[in-house]
Length: 244
Image 1: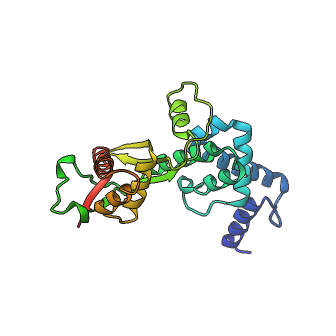
Image 2: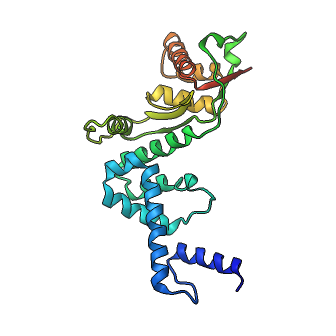
């Protein structure tokens, strides 16, 4: 076996918890323990607020199961752990705040290192026909619908104050993450804003968004909600450009 083949066998054995041929198992145990410890520590750093909420023992156990199922495949550990959120959603299906905290942890971290992009100023919101205008958002923007008050919990943990108890929230509420300037940001969203952002990201025009809102609200109120969303998205540096 040449050096390259031996190195590949060694790495595969570490990931699988095995001992390669012609290797002292005592020495291998040192490497295996360090490998696992470093991966758990990396996940704990990435998902810091989730770990504080879940507790060290429960988090480390979940991280260990993740490592067993998902050995690293990238050259950098910064990209490791993306699907940990999905694992937590499955394992803690009755406690949705856990996976939602993890979602915030992951995307705030990714927003920090995400691509730079200019954003529109409010004074740039000019169009000849607003009904046809579509929106380009900054590439760091992510959103999801939520079932819990995870945003309030995350904020309290970050502020080092006692977090509220986890509760279920009304259907349709959402959370979004993006970077404004150099600062990762996050916010909770009403059901109306969540639906509007979902439509806008899918390519709906401003007129189509107003039409959607008009199914629930009278015309003037629908336009007011749509305009409020547009104003907030622009003021918070979420919109990169207009089309149409």
